Image 1 (cartoon, rainbow, N blue to C red):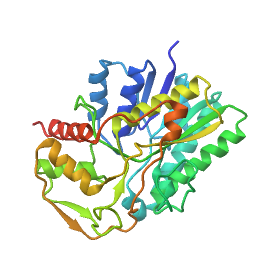
Image 2: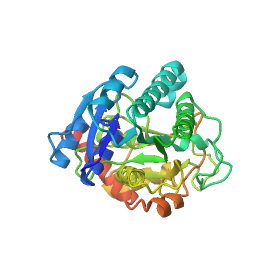
Image 3: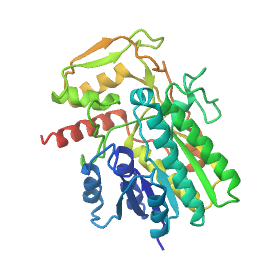
Image 4: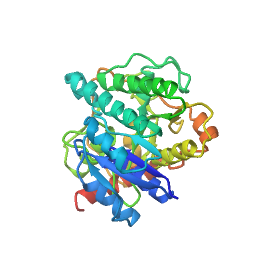
Length: 342
């Protein structure tokens, strides 16, 4: 019998790509979303890619405890991947209570329902933001977490603690994996799903593609005086499909009982630092375009350089990032043209 995975926030950027990979790996998937961060575009794209018109979908808010309880009663859920959270750093600074309420309550409702309905494997979508400005790079899973730079980052740290404490107290009912993502970029090679920011993008690559297509006049690169080879920040940019596949490896690890601890942590990155300027130059080269960009003042809260040591994920889970930055940036541009109807 096929195992069923609930993907909360499954109509968004990461959730839609994970849903595709889960279905292609033979899992049944229930997608739930309230469309606060996205519209139906990517969910419709998932149906086209997978050839599945019958993917169960529940439009709901995970802050509604009763709705979450009903969801767990309606389906036999073997694992849940939790994405349903607000994710804009700047907005979280302006509206901290909104972020704490939504991001913590939604996750606690999932854990409470999972316990009530007989236990579950829980995969939490965490972030490299928990490492703050690390004292040395690359970071491993044992690198100390730093105080968060924003309420958004703080909710990731707090949800990590909530899951670890719940697992500890659950008598084996709840098992957990924390996946700490680095910088997901790109789009599905089909160009049917990708990153679809509402309003002003929070991430670099949509800014690049929107500038390239003419939606934005100029791309600002924040800071060119960092102590890095070219003066711009260095990040670990991971292809969204590689990232999505990591979730399949993690879910399978939980369901097949291969975990070494009741709650495990994995960095999900490439292990290769790429600077902001290198990424911009690579986009221009691979897509044969010239971008209008300028250097601007540093942004408060930006870390100078951070990238993963993905050894643990490579050896323990058997997962490895394989797509090149060039492939990723080609896919991102194809997606931008697709949504522009070009």
